[in-house]
Length: 146
Image 1 (cartoon, rainbow, N blue to C red):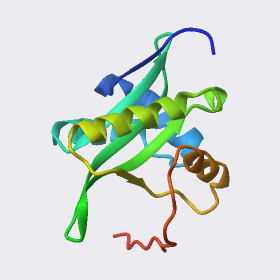
Image 2: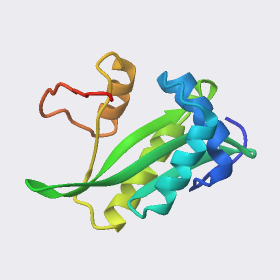
Image 3: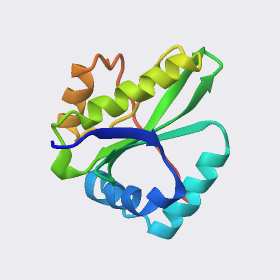
């Protein structure tokens, strides 16, 4: 990877790149305009932090963290999404995004970070484990769509 990687907070103008990465990297085909509305809402609420990785003026990755508070554990941050453009994978971008998110979480008093990853994403699981993430239990993710 040539050039200097810049990590910064996401801004509404990033929505096109974020929408593209959600589609290409995670399989979520969510419309760009809806992504813009969601991004603006998340950035305004004070609980969410969205970092982007930019290379030569192009957003090539992002990590989204949010407060995770439950009655049975200390406050943590939940990694809601992390994506890197396919052509920039295995170049350290994901590692830098996670390290930046972890640093922010620690600075805000969180006891740690957590994430949920789809069962079929075995390469991602190996990556997370290489960075010290552990899977202490198996869970089933259930949802009801209206």
